[in-house]
Image 1 (spheres, rainbow, N blue to C red):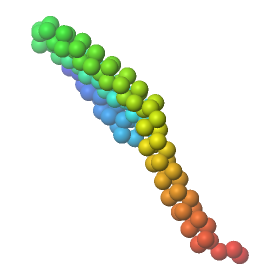
Image 2: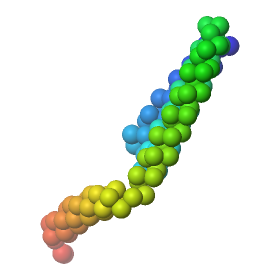
Image 3: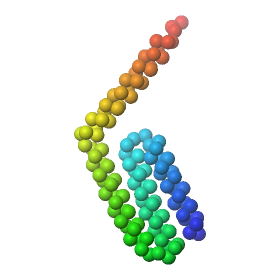
Image 4: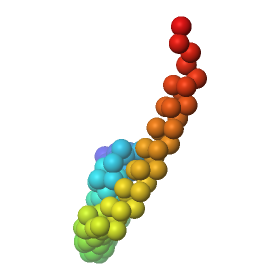
Length: 112
């Protein structure tokens, strides 16, 4: 039974990595990283239980605190003006490339 639990945790961790890579927004990616960290804490606790090492729970608690503080830090940074400036510049560059490609596609169309 514990093997099934461990495999299920690994599957959800893989899904969290996939979500972090293809997430449509920054907040989806941050949520995926947070979920991965939470599943890592759960995995450390389960492995500690399976191996009969209760000190793994202390490690899991410390990792959970580090995960929480780092996610709060990333969210705080994502709300800063510096991050928004870089993000807006990237969005403007992406919009320019989309606009240029649509203008090129429209100019290639022939009117009947």
